[in-house]
Length: 87
Image (tube, rainbow, N blue to C red; front, side, top):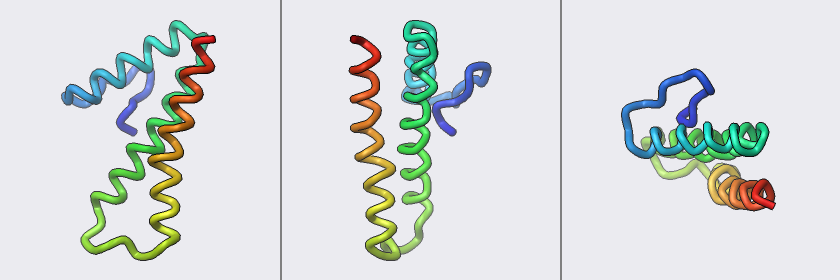
């Protein structure tokens, strides 16, 4: 998704470029932990894209729970994972 693969060029957007650079540094500096970081970032971005594509209010509580899990919980997992990789 937006985080991109190792050999992929990020979209010409400042946030995408910064994320791409941070993931590459993470992969280099942590021996591959960046792959897990990319997983959490992709979950967040994919959920935000699905939400943005809705033309109507969210279809129900299950959608909102999935959105919360894929955005907020993924962000918390990403922070926790990044913190652990620095120890």
